[in-house]
Image (cartoon, rainbow, N blue to C red; front, side):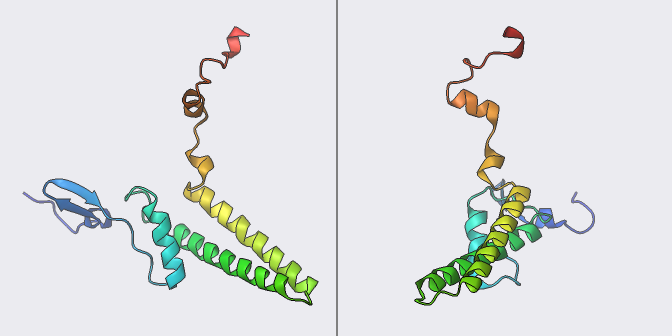
Length: 141
C-alpha cells in the first residue's frame, strides 16, 4: 500500500532507476542571470547531488551573484588601470567594492561550508601527513 498525501519536495527530487535511488542536483533559480546560473552549475557540480538542500539554495544563489559581481569589478579595475589618466578616486572606489564583494563571498562560502577550511579536519590531516604518532598527548609531557 502506498503512502498517503502529497509527495514532499525531497521525495520528488529523488529518481528511481531500477531500484537505485538517485538525487538530482538542484537547478539554478530562474531569477539568476546566465552568468550567475553558470556559476551555480559549476559549484553544484563539484559536490554530491544532495549537498545543497532547499534551505541553503537562497544562500548559494546570493553567493553566485557575488561571484559574478566580483568578476565584473575585477574587469572594471583592469580597464581603469590601463587608462593613461587614471582617476585615483574611482580606482579606490572600485578597490573598496572589490573588497566588499570578497568579504561577502567569504562569509557566504563559510556559511555554505564550501571553503577548503570547512573540509579540513585537523585530526584526519595529522594522520594523512603521518604526524599522528609524533603529536604527544597532553598527559605524556
